[in-house]
Length: 359
Image 1 (cartoon, rainbow, N blue to C red):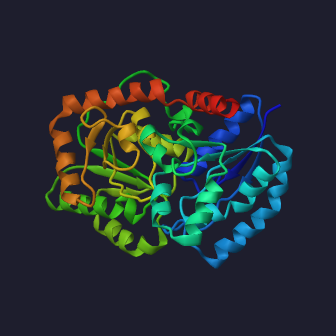
Image 2 (image 1 turned 90 degrees about the vertical axis):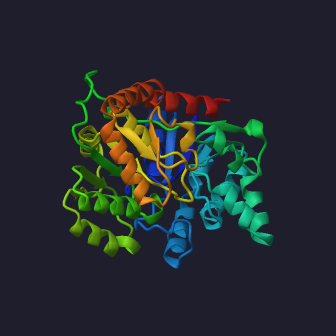
Image 3 (image 1 turned 30 degrees about the vertical axis):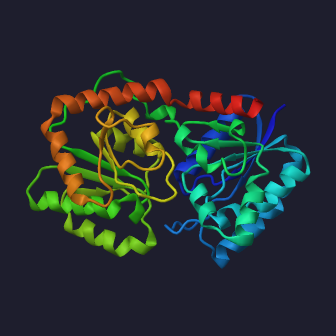
C-alpha cells in the first residue's frame, strides 16, 4: 500500500493551502492511499506570514516531535511556506525524510519562493538551497510558476498541478443564472491589504457617493493590523455586508448569490487563488489583477477583465463597464461555469496528483 505523510496546514483557519491539503488528505484516502498528517496550522491569523516570532518558533518546535510518522510511510508530501523561516520550520522533516530514503514531494502554493531565494545572502541562502535541493519531486500550480523550483532541482523533477473546485460548489442544475440587473459583488479571501481589500472598499465608497446601485458581500478573516480601518469602511458603506468566515453551504450560497467576483490582489506570496476557480464554477464574472499565476487560469475578455493594482478608480470603471454590457457579461459568466466544470474538478486534481506520486 502507498503510504503518504502530509505535512502542512489544515483547516482551521481555512486558506487556499489548508483547503487544498484537506482535499489531498480525503482524495488520496479514497484512492487507496494510507495518509498520515502533521497539521502545521498556526491558530492566529495575521498578514505577516512567514515572519519569525517566538510563539511561532515554539509552536513548530513542538511539531517536530511528530517526526516519527516519517518512518511509517513511503512518501512525504510537504506544502511549506515561501520565506526562509517558512522553509526552516520544515527542516527536520526534510532531513529525516532524506536520511531514511523516503521520497520527498514539495508542493509550492505561490510565486514568492524564488524571490525570497534571490534576496537571501550568505549562509541563509546556502541553507535554503541545500534544503530545497533535497526535493525528489516539486509541484507548482501552473507552468509560469515552475521558476520557483528551478534553482533547486531539474526541470524534469517539476510537475504542474492546477488547483480545483470542490464538487459541492458546482450547480446541481444546468440552468443559467439570471441576467445581471445590478452588480452583486463578492470578495472571498482573507481581508489583507495585499489582497486589495482597501482598494475595493474605497471603490465601493466612490460608487456610493456617485449614487451607483450595487450590492456587495465580503467574506474572510480580517487581518488584525487592518481591522480598525476596515471596520471604518464598513460603517460608512450602506450596500456592503461583511459575512465573516464562510465555508460549506454558506460559501456556496454566497457564490451563488453573486454575479461579479473581485480580487484586486498584489499579494507577494500569491499563487493561483482557488477562490477564482470557485467563482467561475458558480457562474460569476471575474475582475482580477494580472498577478502571479493568475494569467494561467484567466483570459482577459473571456473569463472577465483585468483590473489595475492599487487603483480603486479602475475597479469603479470596470464595474460600470460590466453593468453596461449585460449580454457580454452573461456570456462570460456561463462560459466560466463550463471552463471550471471541464478543467477544475476535484477528480482531475486528485488523479493528476496520484499520477505524480506514482511516477
